[in-house]
Image: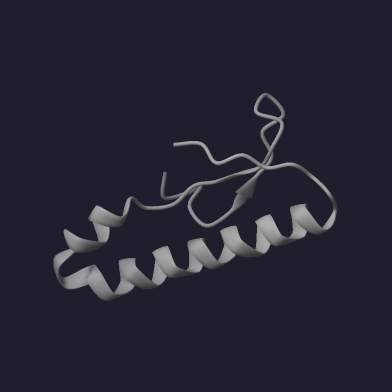
Length: 66
């Protein structure tokens, strides 16, 4: 997961891009690395927003998956 984190991955089988990130609880359990993990999560969420904004501006339908 670490190698894929923070990147937009094309997934033809899902017909939409995927962004791999940390689960928010991982930030809380990170101990001495909590600040670093929080920054990584914040970066990934900003990337998600940018990606969604770009897709919507091109008229591409998106769906959240849990």
